[in-house]
Amino acid sequence: MPADRPIIVVGCPRSGTTMLQLMLHAHARIAIPPETRFVLAAYQERRDFGDLTVAANRRALARRIVDRKESRFCDLGLDADDVVERIAAGPGTLGSVLGTVFQRYAARFGKPRWGDKRPAYLHNIDVLLRLFPDAQFINIVRDGRDCVASLKEMSWHRLDIYATVAAWARAVDDARRAARRLGPHQWHEVRYEDLVADPHGRLAAMCAYLGEDYDPAMAEPSAVAGVAVPSFKTWHALTHAPVTTQRVQSWQTRLSPEEIALCEAALGSRLAAAGYELSGTVRPAPAQLLRYGWTAAPQRLTPARRGLSLAAGRLRPRRDLAYVPAAVLPQRAAADAGPPHRLDPSLGQR
Image (cartoon, rainbow, N blue to C red; front, top):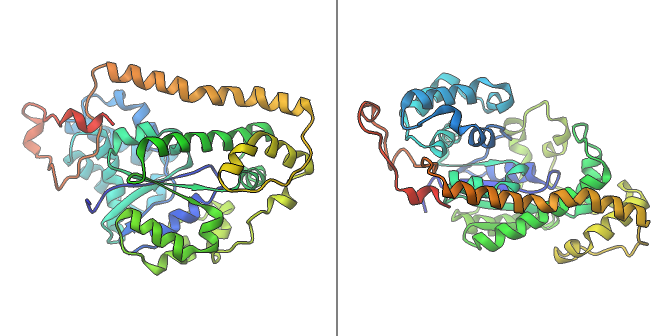
């Protein structure tokens, strides 16, 4: 297994993705940074920078990543100019440009393996596979009622109760599709409730999936929270405390009876399939179910629209995207003066 095979953490927001990020970051060989916002943006804007086999184009993209506040590069504690120059001197693929940032973050801690965490990646697995074909995904699942209860309390959350419930349903459905496609060698799932109840056991199994020895430090993620969680993210205050089961089933007191009824009516089969027991509450009013149906409908259509878009993209000629470790394919300065080096097209076809 390559020493720098990417590790991608996904999950519905407020399902424990940040706690899992810290657990992985506590491993002696793994570095997972605070949540960044430049990977999907760079993919969407990739045509703005032209041929990335040209060093000047890589440098322009690198400057966009390090200079934009929205990218959250500032949270990584890296020297921007150093990263820009390393990207300019590196392999000419978008995945390599992005991977260089994470490599430098791992190097900051003297670690060989790197990855990233962002809940939105769960809905963009195809994009991540194009950039990092051999990535290992870890999906964390939490009781949808607890996710809804937690999201309601977030200052940055703007969705109403119906859209919030629909978001958890979409997360579960997208994860199911990814699990079927990728299989156990590239997709690993853990329940939040199991992880906090038995951190050593669940993390040991996770390390076996990653091909790493288990590091007991992983069960104490609060030890690295001060480094890997930006101070302005006050909603992650609990990551600075020991792992606890206190928030399991907190929906029982954080949701109203009407909200519990809506969650169980809308999410019942998904909750049961994930091993969560239903409370048996009465069904919500028909008007609530109708409103939920209207809200959830666009989200159910999103995977089909994305599939058509990706299929169309595969029919158009495009440059290679896949990450190539610099140690495997060094980018020589002379390459930019001569014919562009083309990677094996199969690398970017995942």
